[in-house]
Length: 205
Ligand SMILES: N[C@@H](CCC(=O)N[C@@H](CS)C(=O)NCC(=O)O)C(=O)O
Image 1 (spheres, rainbow, N blue to C red):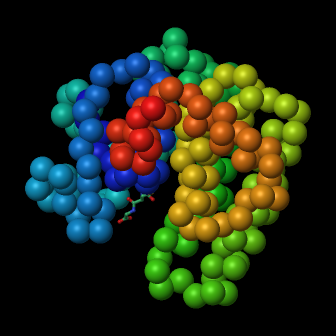
Image 2: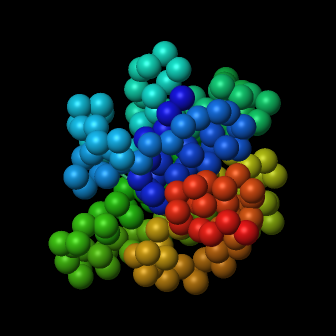
Image 3: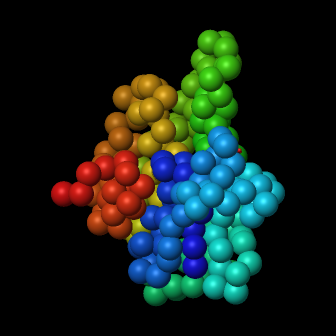
């Protein structure tokens, strides 16, 4: 398998999950602005969607879309318990949260990476993010370690990755102390730190 990624982008979540699952994989960096890979391939030719993540599966096919990749990795290694079994209420609840992270949080951050964003649009996006994080803070209020309980799951890799963007975008999340403590718990996981180091985002200890 090969994961096409851009350092710190949402592809970091799949990268973390591949490491959490202990699966063998290669990494190839993509310049998402210029649409080339680090080996000089035309990214649009490989993935006409033009974005990351993309996973080249062992049969050579390329799979895209964050949530699909997260489920694929979890299903390849059920023992890693990165997702509850299909057909259970627990799986439904995790999927529900994952779509929330994707559509309500990831996509709201996404708009703020556009250098042409106006001050008003940025303020509106930050207000929206704050309203969406209220639900996350409330979930964490019962003292659970991860979003769905005590088990680190696909949705944790995803929420961690997108919330990490608040640093680069200078978004103040101090109104959400439980979320900030959660980020620290997630980054303390060896697989998460290894992914950050491999992407050049942290130094090896
Ligand atoms: N619908 C896609 C969106 C992925 C996405 O937003 N990727 C961003 C990085 S976080 C990207 O590569 N943007 C570059 C572009 O759209 O050209 C998914 O959920 O996987």
